[in-house]
Length: 247
Image (cartoon, rainbow, N blue to C red):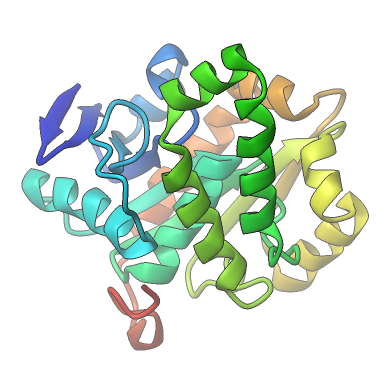
């Protein structure tokens, strides 16, 4: 990994650029070769997450700037995004904030759900973790809890389905037994929502939330092929979701 102004990042592979946010998943421990064989994969941990600097005060505009500062440093103009769970939400949120994003692959999260309570949920998780020294140590090793709360506060402030109603290609997937997805939106309703929007998705039998992340190899080849095609598409006019418009 490399560091730029307190932001840690890595870049592997050649081809169209795909940004993978690192919020609560350490991607370096996972096999992303199906993606790096087709694309230039840039993993970025915004400040407050992973090994990046933790200034103690955060907002979504700062998270987006951290990602795009790295891309500017690398000379990357346009890019697709990829992520799972919280990282997938960030992948979609980048598209809301920047016209540079060409496509989004988000797994393990129902982007059409009502997310108005997500800031409260983040605070409740942090409060519960504080009661268990081991759990709290794991939280602190993953991210600054204040950064996670700021992240989810922003997501909670968006209109419903704002992260699904993007003006560029979106693809989704989740495990059939994913209780995290089901706690936010009925999987049946999620499928209806995605079908109505013409968004392709995969439901992998027999896997829960963590299981799907561990077996991401089951979907990564198809997603990688889709991302490499989508990342190469020329950008169209996105003035109403231009860079910085939403943060």
